[in-house]
Image (cartoon, rainbow, N blue to C red; front, side, top):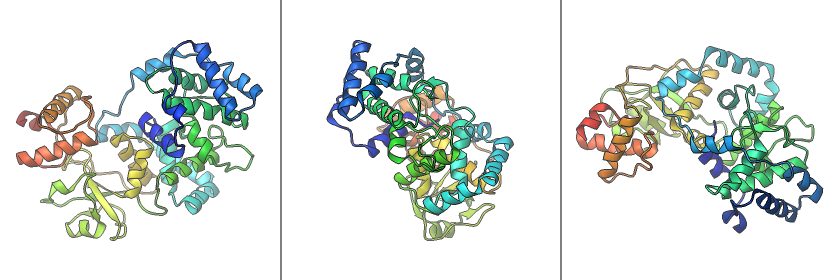
Length: 394
């Protein structure tokens, strides 16, 4: 489930792109294209016989292009989405794994300062704890997307990184399968990230994010640390908000100390409130009548894993459930908009001068911010949750 944008940002930050990558050749004859890639790999130090074996078997995969053109997004509201992903079975399985591998998760906490629930949540949502890691040949997927001229600069370096992982004996391109955009393993990471951050946690001399849960968990942890995870700090807690709270203060744009939030009447629900000195925001995924969460710097790091607000809130919340937090209070949210209504709302917001990004019917950060601003202007509860009433008022 890792979003392509998050993956792309991750790989760019790990490896500055060469001029050749930034101006990656694409299209044209498949055989010439593959020959050029092979030559680049050999110039970079890949043995010629290894390059022959790796690049000689690559084939185009039209399924990859169809999935690329028809990318889905997390369009369902938080309550529906979270209930579809979080089940008692997944919760029980996560806690079972935690009991079965205490040394692994103690190491995760000791070396990375990451709570077990965080990585277990990603394991659950990405591949159902490794049970389904994808059905697309990864080498063919990356080659197909590198040849395609939409984003060759993203995928060409990934294919070259996979060739290096093959040289190291960490994977077999003939049998390695994953997601259509090239993510592989139990927590769905791209080859370049694995090459840079891979952890041989089981000590067998290879980084195997597909077959070794220790390697997958600690390599995923290394990625979070690379993006700024703050060791042993919280990421999210459910809260209650008082009547009369200035809702313009809620949302990702406003941060205050936990102590300041408490003085405004915001309280933790079912768990202790973190240190009053920490900086935090309060988010309302479905408006002030629905669930409320306090989020911290580590929550923002989780966006490096996936750019979907709904996915990240769900994963962050599930991590707290694994560690003993209660089921959230769903409240009674106001009715939201369907995708067509969201598109119409975005058009009207754009006409008023707001930057909502693409007119795609997706409630992203830009649209949420614009909704909150307009709600405040119209005298509506400024909680960032778009409703039919807001659309009518516009």
